[in-house]
Length: 421
Image 1 (tube, helix red, strand yellow):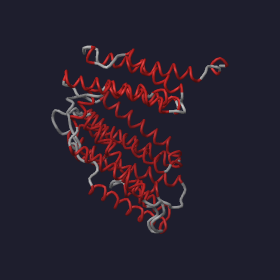
Image 2 (cartoon, rainbow, N blue to C red; image 1 turned 60 degrees about the vertical axis):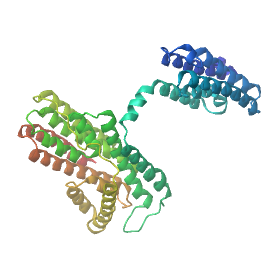
Image 3 (cartoon, rainbow, N blue to C red; image 1 turned 45 degrees about the vertical axis):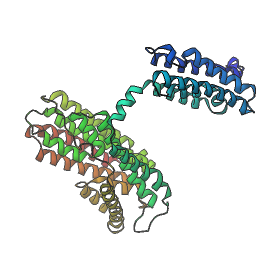
C-alpha cells in the first residue's frame, strides 16, 4: 500500500491517458477493419499518440491553457484538411472519427481536473456509441413523429412544470402541495411511459407472459381483462393465460412498492418485507401454473397498440381522482376514524386503486405508518379479489381452478400480513 501511495500522480494519469487512448484506437480499428486504411484518419497508434500529445501539452504548463489549446487547433486543422479530402475523393460526410480524435486529445485535462470516474464514463460512452452505429440506426427507424411528441410532453411536465410548483399545502381540506400533486402525475406517467417504451422497442411482438409483465407495470386490471378474454380462443395456451394473469398481479406489487419508495420512504421500510413476500408468492404461483397446467399455443396479444401514455385526458382524470380521494380520505378519517379508513380501502379496491394509494402515501393525515400500510394492503387485497372476479366471468372455464387457487393463496397471505402488521 505504501508503494502505491508513493506513485506520482502525473505517472498515474499518463498511464490512464495511454490506456484510454489505446482502447479508443483499438475500437476504431475493429470498427473500420474492412475499410481501406487511407480512408481513415488513424488507428490505435495514432489515437494513442494523440492522447499522449494532449497529456504533454497540458502537463508542460497547466496554468496556461492556451498552450494545450494551440495543439488542439493544429490537430483540428489537420482534421479539417482530411475531412475536405474525404468528401472530395470518397463522397463521405461522417465526422464521428474526427470528433473521437478531439475527445481523445482532451483526456489529459479531463483526468487532471475531474474525478477519474468522469473520464471512465466518457471513454465508455465513446466506445459504446462507436460500436452501436447499426443498432442506433435500427432504433431510430422505429421512432415516429408521435414518439418525439410524447418524449417532449414528458420532459415538459417533469423538467419544466414540476420545479416551478410550490411545496406549500394547498388547503387544510386538500392536504397535499401542488408540487406533490404534480409529482404524482409525473411518476405515474413515467411508469406508463416505461411500459410503453418496453412494449414498442423491446417486446414489439409479445406473447401472454410479456403482456402480463408489461400490463402489470401499466395496469394489472386491464391486463387481467385482456388476458381473460384471450383465454377463450381455441388455440390459446391456457396455462400461459392463467400464469400471465397472476404475473400481472406480481408486477402490480412491484409497481406499488416503487410508488411507496418514491413518496414515503418511512412507509417503504415497513412494507418492504410484506411486498417482497407477496411478489415472490405470485411469481411462484405463476411458475407452478406454467409447470403443471396443460399447454397450448402461445398467442401474441397486446393491451394497447403503441398508445400515447401521456394523453392529457388520462393525466387530468388521474389528477382529479387523486385530489378527490385525498379529500374523501381526510373526511373519512375525521368522521369515522381508522375503522372508516379500513372500510374505504376495501371499497376502493373495485376501482383504480393508484389514486387512493398515492393520496395515502403523500397526504398529511396524522395517523401511524402501520395504519397506512394496513389500508394499502386492504385495498390491494380487495383489488385482487375484483380481478379474480373479472377473470372468472370473462375467461375460459378451464382456467378457473388455477386462478381461484392462486388468488386465494395471494389474498390469504395478504390477510395474514395485515393481521401481523
